[in-house]
Image (cartoon, rainbow, N blue to C red; front, side, top):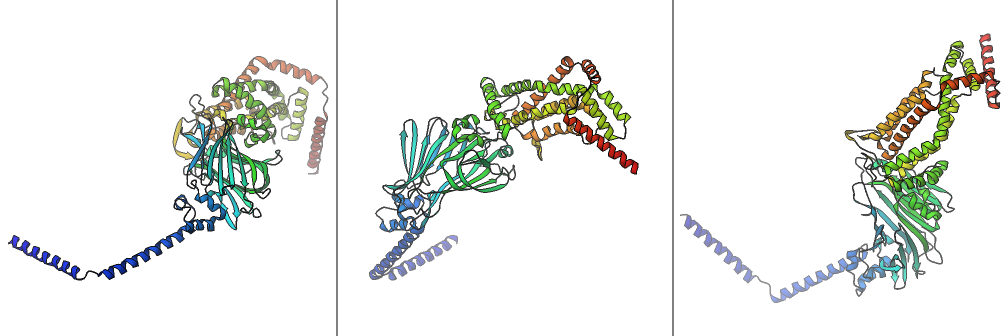
Length: 629
């Protein structure tokens, strides 16, 4: 039964197939119809090819478009000329492809692209970032170097055009010439020359034979946009020391954009600009000052947990001035460490101004005292030991000043019983208390100001050291005890949450430094805290607690080398204070000398006489007011 059903279905299928074949046989086209259809298809194909060719002529030049252009294809070449004018010649050369050329020495490797003739990779061979990867200052399109100009009624940008590369040697120097050609002997040239062992390369921009092509009556701008890569463990700390600095033509005047938020300035006669990302710099320097430059800076770290790749975005739009109907600029480029020892090799360029070494006297102390001494110490000892030795050396140099400070404090301690008696005797009459207190201090040769003045003399050195350690390239990636990088914070524990200002980790060196500074302040201000607080005087108890707290919170994300310095400095200070108080200063002798001074007539200087007169007048006015009441 089932078999019969199958046979019937088969017969029906065979019948249907036979019908279809018969229909196709009797309805096949005639030879005339086939020829007509063929001609119709050829016409459609020609129209499609023509449309595609016209569309290609209007496209932006890309490697794919250029490779499809044949010099003998007059239609395609005409399309290039309509878009590029004489520079269409560059699109017909074999170099019209997105290829690269490498120029390098033993410290720097530069990769230059045919497209735009610009550096697309800048690698520092001897440096690594916090993850151990190579340091690239330029990579993956973070830098855009473009010349914008007009030629034959067209606005052109070199970043869209193809240069012809040529490698050569100039003695031991490697030379790369990149030419954007408008003909065999007419071109715009970028010339890179790299010396052995140097992070600074010569760069020139010049034109040849473009008098009738390039329109020099229209403004020409050299644009350099750059985004700085993160290289350090803490992007927040790195970003704090990332900044755009620039120099004016006279070489004596320098300025900078804001390190936070967005900033923009249009300046005249700029000779160099530095895109600094803490420990690394990308610079452009020119022998002929740029007549006008628009400089921009933008902070890219809005949220440290999200913005983890780039620190700052910098920009410079430089107005170029033609000479003799063309362009001719001799410049330099620098890709390397922000290191004073390297920068000072170029003394005639004032590159040290690109470093945050402090203003005025602070910068002088860093340049001519701290940096040279630390350079010698770090060449003999590990970085951590060099910090300790540097601290010891400066504490010894300042010990005479500190000795005077401690003697003054000892005198104030000896006078305490008499000062208490004065306060008790004239209780309620603050003016009289101050008057008698100053008189006693003058006779004894003791004054709180004498203790403060030595401390003030130490401030320039302390502040210079404060600016030195965060910018010392020699500390970068140098370990000491539990700190793996003295140029970044040390970590003994990570927190499961982030504390504003403090961070999400715990650093040990700031904790130890805070304890040391608390002990020091207890020893140095404890005596003053026992005295009754006088109006107008600083609250010493508040200061005693504030300073260690400030150290603990704010230094948690600072360079551990700075905390090592403060820890060592305060430990040495505590030691010096103990030695002076126990073995050098004799309070009994000081007391005897004070009592002897009291017997002698004490001549007041002009300032002391004036102060005494003012206080007497104030006291007289107060008594008069009380009588009137």
